[in-house]
Amino acid sequence: MCGIVGILGDHEAAPILIDALKRLEYRGYDSAGIATVDAGSLGRRRAMGKLVNLSDLLMHEPITGKSGIGHTRWATHGAPNVINAHPHRAKDVAVVHNGIIENYKDLRDELTAAGTVFETETDTETVVQLCMSYLNEGLSSIDAAAATIKCLEGAYALCFLFEGEDDLLIAARKGSPLAIGHGDGEMYVGSDALALAPMTDKITYLEEGDWAVVTRSSLEIRDADGKLANREMRTIKVDAGKTDKGIHKHYMMKEIAEQPTVLADAIGHYTDAETGTVSVPNLNIDFTTVDKITMVACGTAYLACSVAKYWFEQIASIPCEVDVASEFRYREPPMSDKSVAMFVSQSGETADTLAALRYCAEKVAKTVAVVNVAESSISRECDISLPIHAGVEIGVASTKAFTCQLIALAAVVISAARARGEMDAAVEQELHDALNNLPGLINQSLAHQSHIDAVTIDLAKAADALFLGRGVMYPLALEGALKLKEISYIHAEGYASGELKHGPIALVDEHMPVIVMAPKDDLFDKTVSNMQEVMARGGKVLLVTDQSGADTAGDGVWKTIIMPPVHNMLAPVLYAIPAQLIAYYTAVRKGTDVDQPRNLAKSVTVE
Ligand code: M6R
Image 1 (cartoon, rainbow, N blue to C red):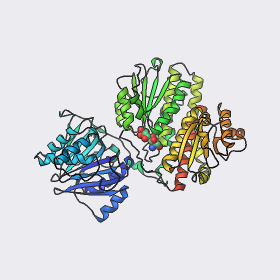
Image 2: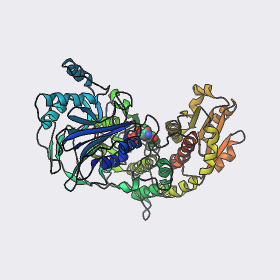
Image 3: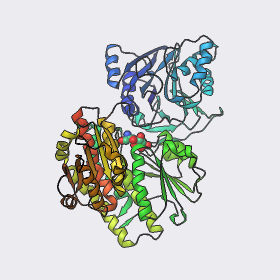
Image 4: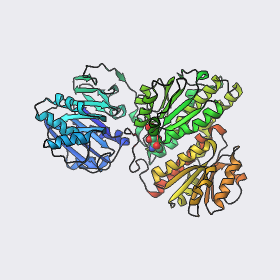
């Protein structure tokens, strides 16, 4: 899940590489590096930690050259230090890599036996050393790279740069995405179109197993069998201008605050005010014949699916299974050819979700992508792709993508329920109205920020926290816990309220904040009983509910956050806002790196 970029340009490459790496830093920020070729001479600079450290280094030790490659790293093999930072170099060749070379140990042993001395612990160094060994045998740069790529197993997006070659990049893709950008007398390589957005919107995506010879005036792509391949060049709209923080201190806060606007936009795509109906453009599925929905995703996207499972079963009466993508295919689940498999992913590049999609592709009636990045691999490989309309999400903690995923999934559920005769026009109108009320309700909840900020004074001192929810709020409790641990590093767990007494209640004492997400719905009284069980044992309950819930809950609650009343079905969308704000303000108080929490990356392109 590293970010890679390559440039054959007409200007000094270093500042352009740094600028592109800034847009790729969401893929990893353990170290960064660049290499350039200037009048045939290969040079490189690398620094540990965030990109800013590399920029500082370049101020003191600049490198010149109009051709170059760059990398921002999320460490897999080898500690995140300078020596393991990319680009890796073996005399005449430098390489940047995203992915994992699975047979690197065998290759390394063979090269070591032949006398190669390795200086790093990485799988990527094997690639440069192998390529250099082919150059030593007298192969040309292109042939050496091609021979190297042939030996590699695992997942990779690679870009090679050579000593003595001012007008050559070799790019290769298997398992990790790679885009070639077409400029005016310039060519680029990047992990995604966003990295290349200020330079070009003309993109050719490499397909699985492709490798490409790139010069300023030509692009030659070959497939895995070495045959010349014709890949379409597309014009991709990515608004790189929208990637600043605006008035906010962090991307996460900006993205939380954007939710009324982006949700209104998303809801506008699915609802029709004139007819009072909800529909999903291009959802070409006959739901009357569907016997099951399978949903597969990771992290927050998985939790959006977990909310949708309640909706599919309760509202559309379709059996629904939800799986964590990293486990799904190892169960080898039998799939029905009357079922629909949905793959939910903000990035559309998550390796496990993509692998699950490939497992299902030939086995189910339809595969459906629910993605934010329209040109992503998951989007391109599914039969149907539904955009969530969240706009670029930069903060590693997913916020607006989660709520927009829920909106898209709600629209699918309502369409399915109508098609199956499970919903009449009056109920559809009610849900249509409830959806359109959501942006206003989210605005109202955002007005409680200073109260939530104050609540986190004590929360930030806690070592552990529990989140509880019942019914459709249970996945939201899991999401609240995930958000809190991800950015504040406080250990947090989410539980179904009724499950508490089956073990976790042993953790409860006067130091344990227990955050209960519970609108006043049909299940509320049962949740209040669970709260009483916590309070009887000295636990501190933070209740997130509406006024009616707060009035019913009675005394003994430690703190309360009052939410506006909301339609039961859509409560998880609205209650996501306090869950996000609790995590955000706690993390800010603790002084952690909110947008780039330790050890994480936004896009997880390794299994
Ligand atoms: O891009 P994806 O939606 O497939 O990413 C899935 C997870 O990696 C992601 O949701 C992750 O859990 C977030 N950092 C949570 O905030």
